[in-house]
Length: 89
Length: 434
Image (cartoon, rainbow over all chains, first blue to last red; front, side, top):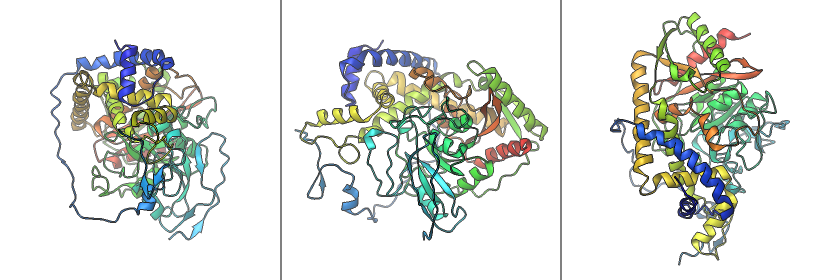
């Protein structure tokens, strides 16, 4: 059973910005969905994954990339050619 | 290279397009002058790309997705960006931040989703072909609901570079069109190796559809005709399979027991991947702008609440929950075991048969607003998600109508045998051609 408090906590972890008026609806939907997920309790098997392909890596060499001006063009807040982010501290 | 332009002014009464390019240029090649619509989660240089989300409003990609670069090189004219469920999350296109797309066959019904805009643009006669994406059925579902052809290619066969990620272990770009030949033609342009996608496989597609299916072994999984599948839809698909038998195919009854938990596994995995992939939308680098004077969490929460719709927020939270300490073993780890069981089920069946056939969707297109409860919407994906969990190719081809609405026959094949599912769809299409 997922409680409103659980949903509030998950909303915090996910930085989703949940307010108290939404909690009841989300919690109800969450419980219906998570209850459906319980079918996974019946899954048997070790899940050993057989693969014939592994990590595909390239040599670490410099390749052409976007000019700084283009790479930052979509950022709303900028300063001196850099992207401005909210304060962390 | 782009030497010519076309005029593109569609009467978009279905809200299929989020952005129309009125004078797109085109060059030489096997798609020369063909107007192609591109789903709005596929990056197009210089053309706004929003994933039908408010959070990406105003975002103009500085580069083309590999698949877009390939169709441009083949001479295609980019006709515009098509509507979709926000970030691909939905089966109706009602989860778009910019209003739902309507089904051209009946405007009181949804076109399916999440590539509903691409399907409606093709079905409504606005473009000959479109690119869609398929994470859990998002090409096949709208193809079935709108009465067109849609191919979900083998995972790795079409580059995902420039596809804005939602659940990257499941999703792929694929072709949609009115005919199997056009789907095959578009596939021949977009398939192939791309070093910018580390899951890309070097297997180009150079195939001309063949209607010869004599001796082909078709598995008919009982679960695809079981509980929850509309009997009239099932009957329509069974008639289509009889037609394939008349053409010389042999049918074999079979079973995929992993279907019992495939849908739950799919939703645990896709929401988990979404919770990670969508963490990048924070109002700093693109889209809506976060208030940089606020603290980190406050600014992010504000922008994400404002920018994401309810289904996206729900899936991000579900994924965060499924991955959280204390629940990871119960949900995510179990879902991965289930996924492997689905893959093994298919592998076992493909020793005995060449393809599997069943309905694409359990019902005809829903009425607008009919699927208001999230779980009931998820349940409608039951017949399409196993293919994505296993990474195999599958096509939906129209096979008759129920209550005047199109029904899709789904043909699933072995990994990298996209050619074979194309051939089966082509054989059926040619046999029933008026």
